[in-house]
Amino acid sequence: MRLGAPVFQPYDSPERWAEVVRSYGYRAAYAPVGYDAPADGIRAYAEAASAADLVIAEVGAWSNPLSPDEATRKKALDHCKKSLQLAEDLGARCCVNIAGSRGTKWDGPCPEDLTETTFEMIVATVREIIDAVEPRRTYYALEMMPWMYPDSPDSALRLIHAIDRRQYGVHFDPTNIIGSPQRFFGTGAVIRECVQKLGPHIRSCHLKDAKMGEGFLVHLDETRPGTGSLDYGTLLRELNRLDPDLPAMLEHLPNEEEYRLAADYVRSVANREHIAL
Image (cartoon, rainbow, N blue to C red; front, side):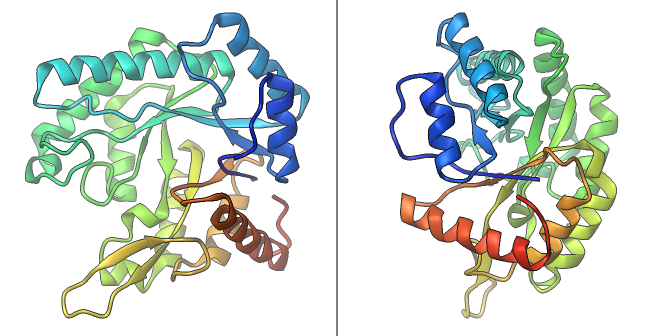
């Protein structure tokens, strides 16, 4: 397993980028360049990552390829295909997106998103993206979400079988599927089930946390690792059973100090569990 996060120091070359990532003590990184970069520049970043023993965890393709607006949908599909090609050229572990939403908000929630019709649309869309690029070393992966497919280990596994493409993978974000009191009070069991059912297909993982409000109706908030109730001991132990190059990536924090605190917490749990990051 390899810890990673966004970096805040500037860099003006692939070699400097690798030095900056390493200066934070990370062994994994988000994609350092976009698909609009020249081909030789993309290749230089891939070579710098390899030389510095860094894994490029993921290229984000954040967009809505299920949008009810046809122009938005087509633009998203093009963005996903170009992002997947970038991941292939960089040698990234995956190109990640959410499935998309049929509502007005690109990342939901929408009642239509958890229907059989939408499931079939997701299958067709992912196949189109993968078949257009034909990647050989990277994967197109859908991130688990609280209110759209894949929203559970079972729906994620069902998508794997339905999409039926070797280069389709899973992006594991346990916090995203802690959507009920039952899951909130049993995060260790949720994590174990996900790894048991999806382990060989997991290409990258996001590290966050979850806390529950005290109001009468259930309200859950995403929070910094170590300030919520996610069972990080179980999470790191289970991830450590998988590919030793699996990236575990911090995200969604507001500044460098918050990322430092999050990394310190994750490393403290890893040290306690005798796990190398």
